Image (cartoon, rainbow, N blue to C red; front, side):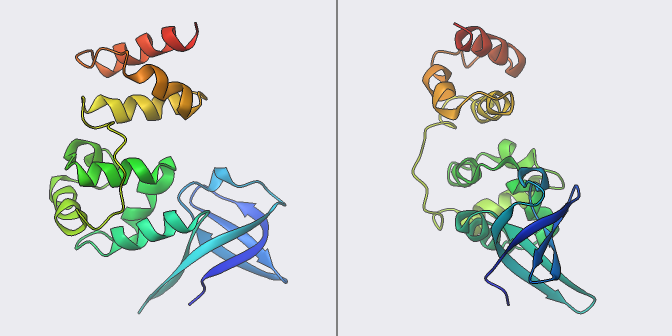
Length: 186
């Protein structure tokens, strides 16, 4: 019903934000509410979920996030409340690449996503996503997790990608993080 809403963020809660647009406060469920700043204006791309007992707005900072969300909720057994946390990492490319490379372990790390739903995502979406492979899943399942962990620690994605190929893929994730930190601190 609404394509997007532009307004000022007036409230930030763990699962949602409230945006004031001309005196109307829209409660919008977002993947990562702490990515917004109070009293700052944003354009949030929205999806209206209308059910018999509920009317909810889901919002995204970019059109790409919204498009991936719409594809995810088209999967049998995957509703908006399960798809939203998948986008909280902010990396739509990693999710798309995991689907294209059939990386079930990466998909199962998200809340409430089990083996059955992960396989259904791959079955329904593989080949339908416009993915340019970054090669992250070609090595070891830990590569994507390593990338996310280092970005979460505040390192730039470009810096992490430069050193990720120098890390021994046979190491545990913890040891890979330690080795990466040593390289990044040089």
